[in-house]
Image (cartoon, rainbow, N blue to C red; front, side, top):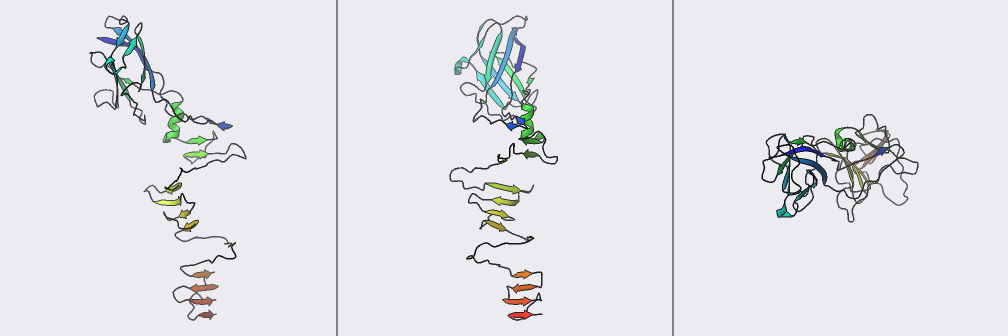
Length: 271
């Protein structure tokens, strides 16, 4: 029987974001999704195991005992991933080697590592996987608390705050994919209903998922004033038209126009 004398996950941070009031750091285009792990193997007598190559299996679970492995990494001579041990010490990149791609997204804080060496049974107790210090910031970005980009003082009631760092900086830019077909931007209710839609074609819709014009609104609108700048375009009011309720009224159903009345009964009714 072999014992782990010392072992530990040395880093666990897939997403790291640096927040600073003076600027921001660009994320790398890709990351190494392998986790460094090091440990020391002793015999039951408390001395280092003999130097050499050892078969090892690493399992990650969601429970400290029992359960089914969420990820398994096999580091054996049979698949070319055998682990080298010197003076009892070994180092492994979990997720490296043939068939060991790391598939976990680490969205839970209850993950445990189990280790099996050669033909021994899995060592106990399993080790709970901790986090690198930078992962505390990544956890906030993931939604466990307030997040901010470009500032260290997020808006009090906002989950996410994006602030321009200079007068020339654009706080947020959304760039579509080549041949973008899906909407560029949406605002939804908790139930999934779309409140605002910005299509890939540049149409903005409020209260509609399929705006047919540059600006489409379904429902009542209130505005201080309206300005039409085209001298050739025709404005169409499909449901009639009214100014100050009864100041000037066009009844769409009868094609009657009323001045001073909300219910014109002739083609032109003036009260």
